[in-house]
Length: 80
Image (cartoon, rainbow, N blue to C red; front, side, top):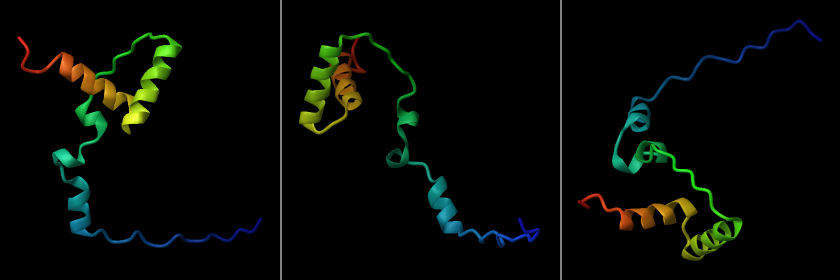
């Protein structure tokens, strides 16, 4: 092995516009973690899980999206 050191170069300068874009906060830029902060675990049969997955796939959505929609309809925010 050679004793030569290879430099990796200087850090590139930052673009202020790019940095502002990365740091912007808006509803469209929020990740799932920002919107959904509680995890719910359910024990279901493998057969039910399979039916749910098939139904979600058939609708072109994820299982999580499907279940959130179902729960939102059953438990609306403005319920007494």
